[in-house]
Each structure stands twice: as C-alpha cells, then as structure tokens.
Length: 272
Image 1 (cartoon, rainbow, N blue to C red):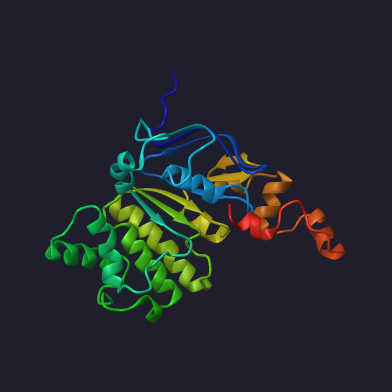
Image 2 (cartoon, rainbow, N blue to C red):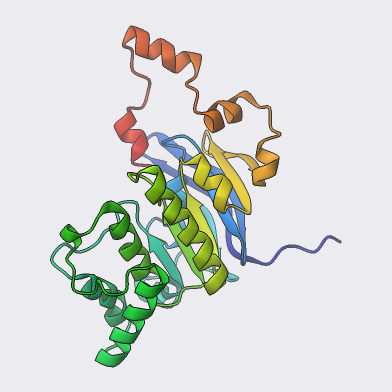
C-alpha cells in the first residue's frame, strides 16, 4: 500500500455555487505539510473561493474541509478561533487599517487573540518587520508606504501569530516586476525560515514557477492539472498552454472583435 503524504489541509468533494453559477464542483485537494502549493487558473475559476473555504470565510454547499485531521466544515465562529490562529492570510488588497500605524496594524491580530503585554507586542512586531525587511517603519501610516511596502506589512501582520500555514491571495498583483520579485523572494525566505506550509493563488506565472513545489490549475470548476513546475512545461493541453503563455482563445478574440460579451462579465469573474 502506497503511503499517503502528510496533508495538513484536505478538501473533499467541495461544491460551491453562487446563484446559478457553479464555482467549485466536487473538488478534492490535499495540501501537503511543509510544501508550497501554487494554484493558478483563469479569473472566475474559484481560486480565491478555495482559499476562503480553508479558513471558513465561506462554507461549502456540499463536501468537507479538514485542517490537521479535524473536520472544520461546520464549526462555529468561536470553535474556529484556534484553527484560524494557525493560519496566516495575505489578502489581495492587503486589508491594512488606514487609520492605524504599521505597528498598530500588526498588533491588531495579536490583541484579538489575547496578547496584551506591551513588551511582547513590540517584540513580536519588531521580529516580523525584520523578517520582511521593514523594521524601523513601526510609526509609518499606510498612506506613507509604497505598494510593495504595504504588501510586506500585510504579510508581517499575517505571520505575527506564528502560523503553521500561510495563504497568499495574488501576492504580486499591482506590483512592478522588481517589487513582485521581492515578494517572491520573501515567500521563499519565510518558507525556509518559518518552515510553514504555503498556499499561493496567482495569475503570475513567473511567480508560480519561482516559488512552487507543486502547481495546481483550476478550470471549469475543477482541477485540470496537478504537477510540478517542471512538469507544467511538458503539458501540451491547449487550455493549459494558452494560460501559461498568456494567449487569448479564438472565442475570446472573436468576442472582442464583434463586441459580444460572454455569459459572465469580467467583473463577476474577478470576484471569484
């Protein structure tokens, strides 16, 4: 009998729809402890929805979500607190509080989880800012930071509770290539130094190839590809090749030429 990998997160038969639109359909996925798994796929294929199921910000219509062997699918918000403490989430929008300093943003989740000592708050804040290369910016306001710095502060906040798992939702979106590469290097650094399990959702193929141990591609509500960065280069499926190379389909080009929209708008697709 083949030994199964040590999965810290397991999704079984996940189905999720919004109105009549199916986003995830009978999806099974194991996230192996200690690895970096990158999820790619076109807008609207369910990448962010998948992340939100892992932290129970969304609940499946059918199926089960397991974290470290525990079925968390139907846990209450109170029961989820110790689970969520073990997971750091970097939101695509960073989700920093504009009215708070950098230090106050990082202190926020610590205080929410019962850490009140000013000395410990400052020590943890300094430690995570050092990890992301921003120690000394504790008193800056978010409006004083560049896009890359905001992303790094948001990441510092995400790791303040020493999570076992870090979830990244489009970590390089909106950044120039140099700042995007800094984020990629930071993902690798944190994976190496903190020994976390990492799950990255991205459209950025350069980022995916650089940070991934494993690449999963979602398409039409299901997993189309599950491979390594090296294995992805060998796949000849037209859908995969077009996505990886950034080529529009003939149907999409025809829509553009003739002005006919598809069944789902770009705005609706971006929400999932």
